[in-house]
Length: 162
Image (cartoon, rainbow, N blue to C red):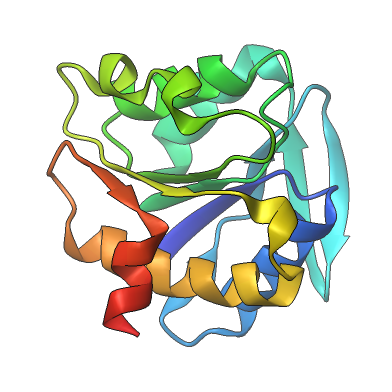
């Protein structure tokens, strides 16, 4: 069972991805997610606790996700801080880009000295939300199989395996 934390649950893509994680028999959604404020959100029948920024690192250490899927906005204040936090804690993560070129994320620098890997799903605004949510399930399994390698993967690598 792959324990998955999904970030960006208030958005359509994050919400849809969380539903896919819940319904997939190989993955389990963690009851906590990162947010700017403490609150809860319902995803299907599941209640997820959204944890305020001051407790983000503690939440990751306590919940021990196998993979983090971060579909929060790349323009949010905490976005790059989150990526650094995942790398610091050696948690593989999946991110998407909408408007930025992925080179602007400085992923090589973020992963420096980490055992974390990242898979980038590029140009999400040009793809169907359902398709990306399903692709993310395959990406979770792919990253889990490559755990412990500090590497940047592209979504087309996952597509080749489907």
